[in-house]
Each structure stands twice: as C-alpha cells, then as structure tokens.
Image (cartoon, rainbow, N blue to C red; front, side):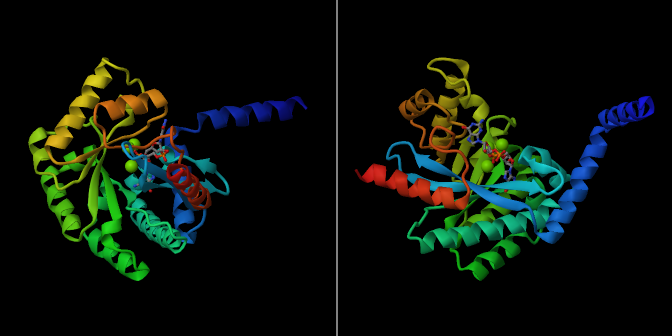
Length: 284
Ligand code: C2E
Ligand code: MG
Ligand code: MG
Ligand code: MG
C-alpha cells in the first residue's frame, strides 16, 4: 500500500514537472490530428453593433476547439502553437470555408449580414497563395467578396509594414475589407498608418476595460477615434461589457462596438436567435 501511494505521489510529481514545452508538444500533436481528421473545431460568432442605430453591422468568426483528449481549449492556448508550427494555414482555410458556409446558411434564413469578419494571423498572411485560396473558396461557396472583412492585428501588420500594405491592397482590389485588430498596443508607426489599405480600426479591449470619463484610457480611446476618422477609417471598440462604456463610446463618436454587453460569441443557431430577437426589438 505504501508503495502504491509512493508511486502515485511520484506520478503526481512527474505530472507537475510536465514542462511547458511538453504541454505545447501535446497540444501540437492533438492539433495536428484534429486538423487532419477535421474534427473538434467549430466557430462562434460575435455580433458587431452600430453604436448610433444599434443595428447589427456584422459578425466576427471566432474558432473554438473541443478536443476529445484535451477538452476545450481557448484560442489563446492553441492559436500561438498553430501559428508557430504552420498548422494555422490549413486550419485557417477550414475556418474561412466554414464561415462562408455559415454566412450562406444565414442568407437562406433571410438574414443578410453586412459583413463577416475573419481573423488572419501573421503566418497565414505571409502565405503567398493566401489570396488565391480565399478567392477559390469564395467562388466555390458563392459568397461575394465584399461580404468578407479580414482582421489582421496591428502587430502582424507592423512585422513588415511594406509587404502588409501591398498584400492588403490586393485584398481591397478584390473588394474585401480590412480591419486592424487589437489596435493601440503595438507601437504603430503613424507614417505607415496613413497608407494602410484598411477600412476599420478595432481599439484593443485593454483600453476599454477601465474606460471612464476623463481617465487615461479615455484620452487614448478618444484620440484613436479622432485619428481614425481623420484618416477616413471606421472605429470599433472591442470588449465593451457595460452600459456605461457603451454610453461613453457613443459620446466620443465611436462607430461600432463589440463585446459581452450586447452578446458573447455564439454558435450559429444561437446567433440566428439573437439576430431575430435583436431586430424584433429594434422594430418595436
Ligand atoms: P480577437 O480577434 O481580438 O477577438 C476578440 C476576443 O475577445 C475573443 O476571444 C472574444 O471572445 C473576446 N471578447 C469579446 N467580447 C469581449 C468582452 O466583452 N470581454 C472580454 N473579456 N472578452 C471579449 P477569443 O475567442 O478567446 O479569441 C482570442 C484571440 O484568438 C482573438 O482575438 C484572435 O486573435 C485569436 N483567434 C480567435 N479565433 C481565431 C481564428 O479563427 N483565426 C485566427 N487566426 N485567430 C483567431
Ligand atoms: Mg479579431
Ligand atoms: Mg481584438
Ligand atoms: Mg486579441
């Protein structure tokens, strides 16, 4: 008995020693298998709201992974690993295709969203065949390119701004729009911002979290909105959780908001319910 206990304790000890790199390796292996089998991934959608009209102006697709061994993992846990290993490329195509299929489903239900936002990580963005691949998927699903908004983080853009400007302008030529995600935390060079082929800045949620009239986050947020507008861009605030944040953002001229205050990211069926209820509420 003592021996078994000792062994258990040893196993526990060993488990605690499971280093970060081993944990990463486990996730990587499961990720590879899940991508090969195309199993365990699904998408949720978070509505984006026009702050003036309160209309839903689009949704953002967010990937979810429920692994049969690892359980459910958040994108923060597996997207960086998928990026690092290049697995984000095949996963990204799956995400894009699934989002287009779901957009079609919404259209068939009479819900014609203005746009579907899809996140692209830097690694996907650097793939030379990305645009051709996306165009082929649009063609195959019959979704119009102008329905698609691509979200790229400010830090991904700033990794190599000149290349990013070229690639983004090619997306724009194909009539897709571009949003700069997590804006405000990556030390953008303002001279690049001026020539960035984008239509929207998404203010990072770290500025919204403690947003209050007159505080530093308020000053930064108001400045981003003013600068964005002067550059001809729409400005969206991410991570809006309260009525107070919403009112303040409206006061300082923010165009769009996204966050738990209106809705968490939802699976497709719940999204359909949300949109129907929301629109009924607006029409009353
Ligand atoms: P992101 O693109 O900036 O997405 C916004 C994140 O904020 C999402 O987390 C969303 O669930 C969360 N969020 C939305 N509203 C609120 C709020 O009011 N409060 C708080 N606390 N959080 C809110 P999620 O889904 O965990 O995704 C995290 C990041 O993972 C994303 O940040 C994006 O960079 C990446 N990611 C997610 N899905 C995809 C994808 O399909 N492809 C790629 N390449 N990256 C993705
Ligand atoms: Mg995003
Ligand atoms: Mg963001
Ligand atoms: Mg983010």
